[in-house]
Length: 394
Image (tube, rainbow, N blue to C red; front, side):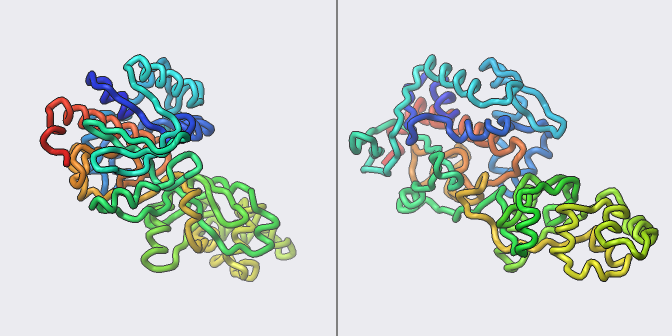
């Protein structure tokens, strides 16, 4: 997006890609339909970015979710809004969009050089590792869009961190976002329920009370509902060393209603039959209740109903950052001007997950990568066209 924006201003642009082909993370996102943005109206949309929203607002003003959809249409890719407000290409694939986009870049004269991994600075030049050895290049402006630290096999391995830090760029350590969490399951829970989805629950944390579903894994929990609470759980663990996701296993039913339902069950009925008929709990939900409240079978009806409606599921730690969908942390905003240029490196602009922001899944991540890329590309072009590179660059 940065290359497109800069080339659109009439500049000569070269795009260096470390991998053998471009857009690998975009293609990975396309495996689940390519949730490209979200139809949530602003400013509610902006609030998804927490403290970073004020720094991102101008970029989103310049390339809003509606503008992103119009951009897709311009590439011949129609989109639709799903029932959850998430926006997808009608074809539910990333490859047609990527092909059309690369064709546009080619028409703009953008030169692509594959297998060129940035290796740092050599004076005023950029160094690249290539299959034929190290090469160096010099440009009037540079845009770095090197990603965060999640999914490193797709290219974003955070190798750039020390190269910028040694130039005086302040960095906030990366942390996993939109990630799964490890849980100390018993062998029984793992053997019986690993891989099973937990549907129609409400989960509570400092992030709020949110409905949805998640999956029990051999190591813990993952899925959209867990990701929605990930930053809150991660922060709790960092500050207090303990955190729990509070589950309502029977949303839509009151404690009083559950108590009445339990009281109607025959005294001779098994515990599992009582729960199935009175609360609709069986399978993995019943397994969670037994796991988190081993004494549940001996609880009086009032306490059992309360446990069903508010079941703390302790989590131990986030899964490794390489498995996370996205990251928090990155280049500190204090070192970036309003045009996404590094204050310590005039003429060097940054975009995307390199910057210190995070957002939930649902299209917010891709939207802001596009928006900041466009903003950085336009700013870099303006920097060159105004001749600032002649006076500012070291």
